[in-house]
Image 1 (cartoon, rainbow, N blue to C red):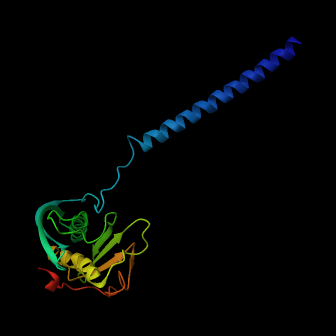
Image 2 (tube, rainbow, N blue to C red; image 1 turned 90 degrees about the vertical axis):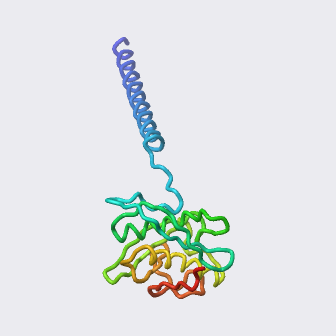
Image 3 (cartoon, rainbow, N blue to C red; image 1 turned 30 degrees about the vertical axis):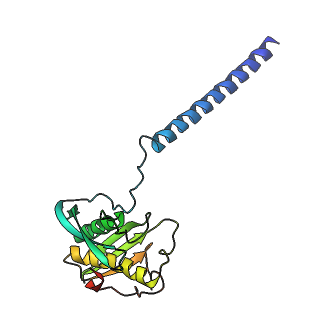
Length: 198
């Protein structure tokens, strides 16, 4: 009887120990998840922001072209730390453009939430700018006038600020589109067009 009772107590003690070990493991996992999600977690990206430039930078005054209420693009000068590489310079000026103007009456070319996923310059001087928006498979719809201003806001900004660039290809979520909103052909590299600038 005593031997049976002692064996039963050992089994209960073993079961209690296993339960305590499982509970301790679960608590440790929960604590680790909290650390990763909280103090050690990632900060939310600023809308339109490119990653901080890697490598050396220089302070430069850049010209950003924003759509205005009169149907033209308007230049806004801004002092920005730009990378010395062509790729980094293009990404930085496009991110500044997406962040929006400081001049009253002007607007950002695209709504908040659009970011620079990638930007690079090929050997022929074609600047590829990949614009991305989570959960937006297509660029925002617009009429032909707004589509034109949006597209040339990017094209003229890139070409005004990167002397090694000769033309611009705009991509959306990694793919080159025939058109952004159904009116303007974006299937080929786009050249500077200053007639939209006032």
